[in-house]
Length: 86
Image: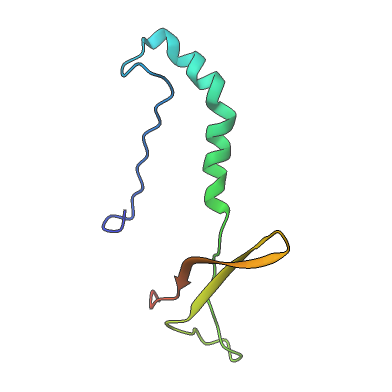
């Protein structure tokens, strides 16, 4: 993924390596909604450009992410950093 920017995914929906073709519509119908929801998850996350007050991009900025767990803010060790991609 890092070298090609192409994310490939294999989903194994049963125990058989090569299920008969007649079973494929069943697998699709059983998993269609979950697969579509999975694709929609690509729109979740942090997106955008970090700018200063003058609207200029801030390079090498860091975004710290926290989550609320039982009324306590806990740091998620998965920092995002800006880069020079302009």
